[in-house]
Image (cartoon, rainbow, N blue to C red; front, top):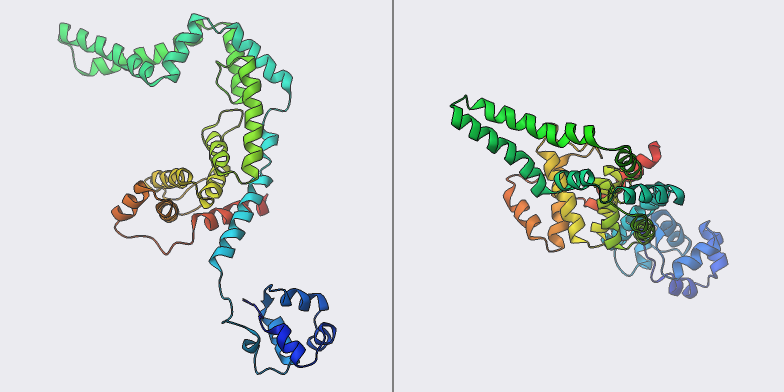
Length: 337
């Protein structure tokens, strides 16, 4: 516990003490007396020593108000500082590819097969929701039609549809893909980027991500969220790391980013619905963590969070704050590593 000795200077002068003589009588340094008289907090034992040296009944005579037991604003600032320190300790810049020649090689490989029909077809079917649905519905529809025409068992359409879909999406592209396509996909996979990006796009993305990381480490909440989402999904030159993504989102949420708080809430809600109701990334109780995140998101104006809080029948224990919770996770991992 800490106190502010507002009347220390007046009492010291009134009783004829200099800063040096009071420090000597109290058994502390002159610098400590100077610091306290400027309005900084004093530890409880220091306050008792000073009040005894000034022959006060207790240290409350030197205080304007009651002792400071807790300062939520100061605690909040400390949490933000710890979160930013945790983000810097992640060394995110070092996770980006460090050799430009690798970026250029990947871009050139992508450009070499940019107009290849196999590559375009795979991109449409594997990276687009419409393509995936079509690839599933067309074989199933054809197999259902065959089943109807030949009056066969209803199980066959599903089996045929699944087999055809698996063949179209997995086996056929592998059989007919060229060495150039496989090289481009391998390089893109190693760099954690989309295999359709050109050399210019990759270099631009690398520069953009480096700038985002720098801004995130300095406390820019929009950049924090962007970097966290890239880490969570994997991509944009960053490998997947959900634990670090959650810590960065926690920093963004504590800084006032509603979307980050909602994203954390959704993550823990999904986790709490699993058979094992704790987050494997953080080791936190998923229901408690979801509630913490919802409290934070609600305070930032989230209707989704307010509806979730209203829906749960028995809220977990009192909130300690999503920032404090993730601070503990980040520092714990840092200590263990």
